[in-house]
Image (cartoon, rainbow, N blue to C red; front, side, top):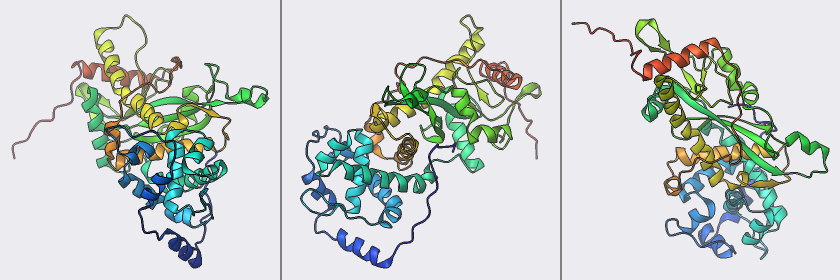
Amino acid sequence: MGPVRGFKKRRKIEKKPEENASASSEKERSLDWWDELSKRMNGLQSPSKDLDKFKSVFKISRKTFNYICSLVKEDMMARPVNFSFSNGKPVSFEDQVAVALRRLSSGASLVTVGDSFGLHHSTVSQLTWRFVEAMEERGLPHLQWPSTEAEMTEMKSKFEKIQGLPNCCGVIDTTHVMMCLPASDPASKVWLDHEKNHSMVLQAIVDPEMRFRDIVTGWPGKIEDWLVFQSSNFYKLCDKEERLNGTKLKLSEGSEIREYIIGDSGYPLLPYLVIPYEGKELPESRAEFNRRHSATRLVAHRALARLKDMWKIIQGVMWRPDKHKLPRIILVCCLLHNIVIDLEDDVQDEMPLSHDHDSGYRQRVCGSVDVKGVLLRDELSLYLSGKLPPQVFPISDS
């Protein structure tokens, strides 16, 4: 995973036996926690016909919620605190996770979320941050580059089934998380992007199932896509030939196609990053390549749109966020996005498929070209047009 500005490893907190005992005693209730919590909540919209009330509130199934609880429980219970609802009842561990998930998924203000649960807005803020701190460490296994050849082979095969691009390992794209910052503060100018919005960048490499495999966030929105990419560990590993260095596809005439990712014209053409051909009057083979390239890139557009649609805290314009905490919130939203996919939560099947994640942002053009990248793109174009078929190995009679 690429750098997340503001993310720091925390010291592991030792749990005390007496704290565990008190925490477990607090959880002993005769009724299911959700039954109690749902009766206490106010002002929530009625669930749609296709979603039960739990899914309509938290955007995930009970199974996924329970799994998320299992990830963060140790860290969150290691630092017991005494939060209470307005009626005096203690806030259980499950309640804490529920409040945090509601804040992240609804994007509603701290006051609005607090009012719906019967909590003070400062309590909502504290609970959300406790959850983020726990999740950013415990959830990291869900955001990893494939570690085995079998995983890579499967991922490349699924990409090829989309539009025929062979040996493709990912799609890179960038989105902006917008912020409302005080115009009177000179420091706000740092975050003013090319479209005159205050924003922070999220750059992601996405697999064919819309899973994030690598992210970079924390940079101001005015930073060009290619510069954000160059800041990433992924870029450094590729330059050292320690990533995208797997099996090559052998073609006829001694040519071969290495592993690569694809992106739009905001990125440079590199030996391992393929962008579209520029120009309007292109030969048919290049025009066809661009069509397939564009159709394959949709997986990243949809992933980022789904991310913002499910975790609405990063969808709208955030009111004066802490710029050190925001990258960590974005990371946790990406982890939750991946967990929904990894657990095959059926809630994702009930959501509309959109690809509009950066409305109002125009395409930027990098223009940088590497000779080896030119060769790779031309070979891909010829391969897709059938002019450079795969190498055929003779079958021996044995």
